[in-house]
Image 1 (tube, rainbow, N blue to C red):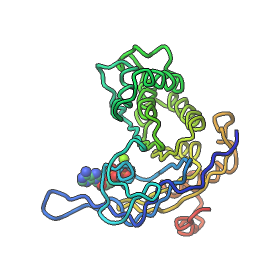
Image 2 (image 1 turned 45 degrees about the horizontal axis):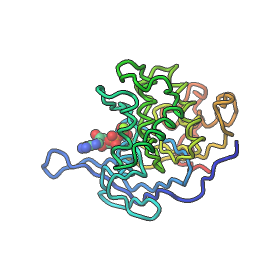
Image 3 (image 1 turned 90 degrees about the vertical axis):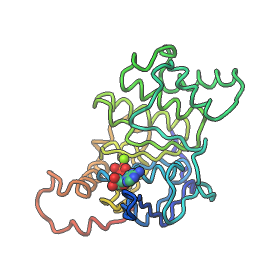
Image 4 (image 1 turned 45 degrees about the vertical axis):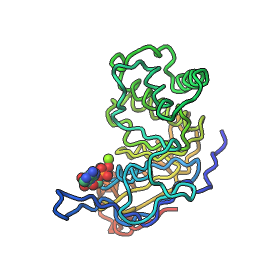
Length: 282
Ligand code: ADP
Ligand code: MG
């Protein structure tokens, strides 16, 4: 498979600060502090960072659900002021309707976008059911599905209206480890097939490297970008195991140091930690 195009800036975040008011007494919490962040067309960006550092806030600003306190957020040069059909969010809690079948949960993703013709809708839903591997489960209800299958439904609902961009907030957080491996491979396959641009938040260093064209690491709150690196492992990565490649192992260790402190593999103090922390990547 050829490398995907990742040239045009799709999202431009400039000097973004988000402060949430606290308790109505004039105090506030600064969630993000002067962030600059770009996403190129067709790029898969993964975000790592400690809890509470503002990752979800950044995603919500791009989704149009949270407004910048200061700074600018643009999509193709236009200010983002509200949610739109060009950006779909996939949450950890897939928030499916328990009273709707798989088919009708997915259809909701089109209903939200207004009035397509019924026949076109059905054809499109069938296409997405196939894409995410839910054939045969169209009439099932969410409670009859495993966590991984439910996450497939959430993903199908997000992509059925063909958004330009997927915003994924720890989508595999509630899934067991084995299913998570399967879903990670599925995400890469589906993204390669559809060419979507993705911002993907995760707690897993391995997942961030396995999925991303680029990984971005946030500092603790107030979040700032502490590190970023391009990930040059060939795709599709689900066809081999990049975890054995030296590029993977080196980046993994570097990210581990940034996020957790000195890694078990390098417990000898080398006096280099500060230098690493300010590396800006390639
Ligand atoms: P992350 O996703 O990295 O865990 P969040 O973006 O959810 O971080 O939150 C960043 C900070 O902003 C946290 O301290 C959180 O408590 C605070 N925060 C998030 N949402 C709100 C809100 N709606 N009102 C007040 N504070 C919030
Ligand atoms: Mg979060």
